[in-house]
Each structure stands twice: as structure tokens, then as C-alpha cells.
Length: 308
Length: 285
Image 1 (cartoon, rainbow over the protein chains, first blue to last red):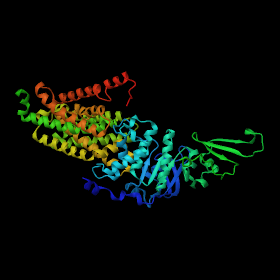
Image 2: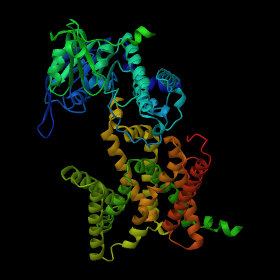
Image 3: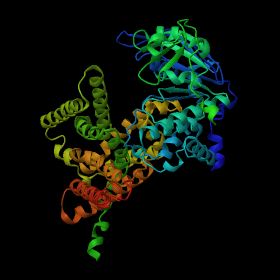
Image 4: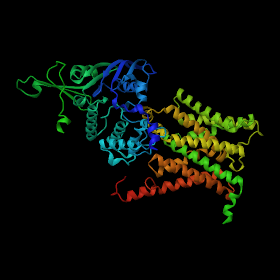
């Protein structure tokens, strides 16, 4: 049995040696109603990266993910993953995608461990009979997301954050080198958010490449080393310190962001000329200290890394 | 005692029991998928839609299965086309297409009254099934069963989460076409046993019953198929004694099992729910 499984195994899935790179070149996506959701988007990312994808609703974040995953065909432009055409890389199982909300029937009769096992299908033979290794990877993934205690629960019995962690465990078990996360922090509890960020950091250590869309502007400087700012076009892309600036954010969000500036007279009577700018997209705000130089680095929260 | 063994002495009864069990098994297998997708009425639609194909096949003296299968496929394509080009809801489209096909079948049969007995199509006639038809049913059901056993996990992933199926290298389109081809083929097979009217029960009830009994898809399939086989076999057997329509007996048995599950299922049954309500300290899971 194990011999058969080993024979049928797709050997090229052993993606651990593949350099996780993502190259998006001049990608334009238009929907059938004529709306151009994304125009000439270009950026490059390398291994060991967590890249934040930031933009208003409708700025093309989800469209970009779908274009990378081949769910929509770009009108022109090209996506290359690990130096291969996207379709080829997808077929080899290099890419994992965790959508914003899973379009699944939560009443479907599958247990948590069954869902995580689905991540292993690309590694299995024709009959999809799990091997010892598949089971071990599932156990590991559940353990890492702290979901082992729920493995025999039907998925509909879980809370929102737990559901998210199940699908992250599945993504982990899938072992793709490139991981796309669409709004992973929306509607999840603090515990899950911490778990996600910790996981992303561990994966970065192991050379994975992650592209994470989020509205949670305040946490972007905490864990993203790169940022892509999007509004139908790529407004800016690069290392967080250079790219995630007040000026760029104001360009990306136009009038949509809540914008508070607190300074001198409003706060105190002394001569302190410093001021605070708070930008918020209804979630955790991003805070800038100082004048409108526009190239200031945003404030970081106390790091989880520092705590542990 | 020996009276109970009488049905086994007749070849036509043996044929009826085994064919019903086989058809029950494969329909039950498909039912597990259909009811989860909210596509249960597709079985009914196809059951009715194949009628003109059966009539045409009799008229042209080709195997009825070929005609039925062709009509079923045409109906499925018709539904897909209408859905793509209108904003009509699925139930309206299903109702529209299958009644059109059924009406066409009735019309054809009434114009050529001697060609085929519409009642046979509507109610099935497993007790009078010809050897040739037995072979058709056995081959269709047997091949379908083998494909399903080989591919059930892939189909489960596609039905549960299509975008994920794509990321692990499955082809959802091909698998869905495979599934609907099997469904059309098995609907044709089921026509012989229970008739067009009751096909829907065969492709809904076993899966729905099993759904109340388990939270795991693999077990759901096993339970569903067990229900299909048992009710098919026992239904045909009982129909010898009550002298009733085999399809009616089979489906009645399935309904009884569903009711039993509805009240007695260990986790999702009514009694279990009441027990939980009475003992609120117990965790709901």
C-alpha cells in the first residue's frame, strides 16, 4: 500500500527547495461589464517576505488575488510564480489561497480534521488515501493553529475565528511556498489575530512568501516588511519603511480614511510643537507623529516578538 | 416459514430484488452529493426529462438507455444555457425545462399509442423487466458505482469548496460534468425500477436520512448506500406479498427510515434535541 502511494505521489510537489518569488507584470483585469478592476499592475516579491496589500474597498485587492490564482483571466500582462508561468506553478501546488470568507456550506458534513486533510490532496495519489505523512502534517497544522481540541467538531459548530484557523491550518498542511491571504483579520478574535501573525512570522523565517490584504492599517508596520498600495493601479510598492508613509496612504485612500490631526493648542498649552496624525479605515488606526513631511515612518505597536 | 422464501423461487423476483438493490445503491451514492448542494430537484428534473428520449428510442428501435441519456443530457444543457442567459432562479428553470420535456414525451407517446406504455415510464415495471434491460441497468449502475468509489473524495472537495479544489490540482469542471453524466445515466437506470415519478426519492431520501445520522461525509456515503441497497432489495421482496407497485414500496420504506432518523438520530434527532433541552447543563456539542 505504502509503495503504491509513494509511486503515485506527485514528486514535483516537493516545493521546499523552490525559491518563493512572485512577479506581477502589467496585469490588467476587466470584467465582462466593462469595469476595469486593475490596470497595469506590476510588482515583484522575493522569498522570506510578508507583503501587506492595502487599498480601499473596490481597489482591486481581491481581483489581484484572483488574477494570481488564475480564477480570472487578465486582459493582458503576466503573473510568474517561482519563475514559472502562474498556471504551471499552481498545478505544482506552490500557491495557497485563503479567501476572505470561505464560500463553503458550513452545514457540510465534514469535521475539522477532514477539512485540513483536504489541503493534502495535491500530495496524494489517484485514490486520495491519506498516508502516514499526510496524517502527521494534518496533526502538525492543527497543533500549530491551536485547533487540535476541535478536530472532531463539525465545521459549522465553530466560532468565526476558529473557522478561520481551520482554513489556515489547511493552508499550512498544503505546504505551498507562496501564500495569499485575503483579509485574514476581518471578523476574527484577538487570539486568532495573534495566532495568524505569529504563524506568518514563522513562515517568513522558513523562506515563504506571503501576500496579505488588510484594512487593519495599524498592524501593517507590525508584521509586513513590504507593502503594495492599490487603487485600481499600483500606487506604490516596496519596503514598508519607504512605502507605508502618510503621503502614500492619503493617496491610496483619498477621502475615505478617517483622518484626525491633534496638535499644540488642542492638547496642551506649552510650546511643544509636535503633532499626532491618526489615519483609520474603521479598524485599528495608523498613527504618525510629527509634521506633514509625508515620508515619516509610522509608529509601531509593541511587538509580539518583543513580548515573547 | 417456507412462504417467506417463495419470492426467491421465481427468477423474475430475484432479478427485481437484485436490480432494485443495485439501482438503490448507486442512486443513494449520488443523493449524498445532490442534497448537500441543494440540487435535489435535478434528479426529479432529469427523471422527467428523459421521457421523450425513451419514447423516441422505442420508436427508432434503439436501446432505450441511449435515448434517455441523450434527452437527459439535452435537458441538463438546456438548464445551463437558460441559467447563463437569464436572471431566472434555479427552481424556475428546473421546473420550466423538465415539464417541457415531459410534455413532449407525453405528446409523442399519445401520437404513437402503441409504441410505448407511458405508465411504464412513469411508474416503472421492475417485475416485468426484460433480460436485455437488466443488462443495461446492471452495466450503467455497475460502471457508475466503480467510478464513484474511485473518485468520491475528489467529488467531495469539489462540492465542498470549488476554489480550493482548483488549488490542489483538481479540475472542478471535468468532475462536475462526470457527476452529471453519472446522474443522468443512473436516473435512466432508476426509471426501470421505480419510474420517472419516484426517481427523485431515490436520489434524495437516502442521503437526507444519512445526513441526520452523521457529520462525516465518508460515513454518510456508507450509510446512504446501505439504506439504498436495503430498501431496494427489501422493497422488491415485500412488493411480492402486498402485490403493490415496487417503486411505491421501496420509496415508502425509505420514508419510514427517514422518519426513524428524524426522531431517533443520536445527535440531530428530535428526541436527542429534547433531551439536550431538558438537561441544559450538558454542553450542546
